Image 1 (cartoon, rainbow, N blue to C red):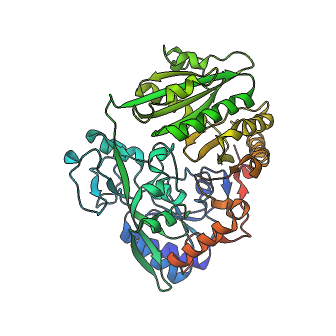
Image 2: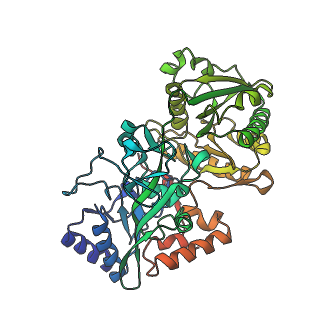
Image 3: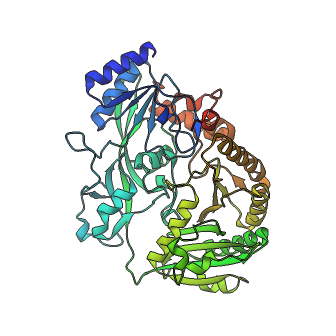
Length: 497
C-alpha cells in the first residue's frame, strides 16, 4: 500500500471506524460491471461523527474518498480506483449506539418547515417528509410506515438502494409520474463536505440547491441525512390498477401503437406508476405459479413468432378516469382492471426481467435511456430487436410524463465468454439507439457515473465542476469522475469462475 493508505489504515484503527483492508476483489465493481481495478481499503462509518473524522483525515493526508451505498447502481459511480478509500454508507443513520444496524425503526416525520408531526393525526393532503439516515432504504422505511398507511413517495425498482445513493443518482421509479425524480422529493440534505482545512457539515434546505445536488454521484461529499417526501397510500376504493396488452409479430407496430397510447395518457391522465414489459415464453419458468393465475396467467401465453407488450398503470380512479376511453380508441389493445396484489405480481416479473433479482445473471450497459417522443418508440424498438436477434432477455421500462425510459440487460451464463458477448451486444445497442433523430438520450435516470465524459454534454460537465468547487474545494470525493483520462474497464475481462 502507499504511504497515504498506510496512514489511513492507522487512522481507521485508532478512530475505531469499522473497515477492511485489501485487496478487496468483491468491491471491484458495482451493479454496472465496470471496474477501475481492485480497491485496497473500505470504511464503514456508522454515523455523521465518524464521517466528519474520516473526511478531516482525508483532507489532511490527501487521500480520495469514494462514497458507496449498496452498490446496486449501474453507472459505475460507486467504483473506486486503487489508492483511494471506498466509503460504504449503509450504516449511517441506521445504527444504534453500539454500531449495530437494525432494519426495524420508528420513523421521524416532519413537515416542510422541519417541525415534528404525529403521523396518526396527519391529513391526507399534508406535505410530509421522513427525516432519515442516508443508509436507510425505501424498502425498510416503507415497512416502518406501513402501519400508518403511508409510503415513500418515489421508490426506485431497487428498493434496497440507500437514500443517499438515490440522491446521488437522482433515481426514478414508482411515484415519479406524480412526484418527479428522487431529488424533487427531497426537502433537506445534511452533507459532510470539505474546506481547504478539513471537514464541514452543511445543511442544505433551499429546494433549488437540493435539486442541483441530485445526481452528484458522490462528487460533493458524504450525505448523512435527508428529509424524504412520503405520501398516503390511497384507500382501496380510491386506487385503481390497470393492465393493457397488445400482441403482434411486428415489434415496430407494437412500439408505434403503444407509443401513441402513452402520448395520450401523458396528456390526459395522472398516475403513480407506469411500467411496461415484453412477454415471451422465456420470461418466467414453465412451472412459475403466475402461469396458473386465473387472471394473469393468460398474459404469459404468446403465439409462436409473436411478442406481447404489457402496460401497467397504478393511480387514483380520478387520475386514470380517461384511460379506458383512450384504450378503446386503439386497435388490438385490451384493458383490464386488476387488484393491487396482482399488480405487485406483475411488477415482480418486471423487476426480475431487469436483472435486479439474485437468481438472474444479467449484464447492464444499454439502459436508462429515455425516448422523449413516444411517437418514435416503434423505430427505437425495431432497431433494438434487430440487434438483439437471437439473444436472451427483453426490454422493460417506465412510462414517465416526459418520455419512455427503457432498460435492456442480456442474460448471460456465468462464463467469461458469455458475459463478454453480452457486454459487446450492449455496445451495439447503444450505437443503434442513442441517436438525436430518435429523440433518445442516455442515463436520464441514473446520471452519468464513469460514462461522464463519454456521454455527458459540456453543460453537465460545467455544472458538476461548479458543484465540486462549491462543496469539495479540497477535491477529496471521487476526483476520478471528473478526469477525462479516466479509463474504466469491463470487469468481465478479468472474470474468473
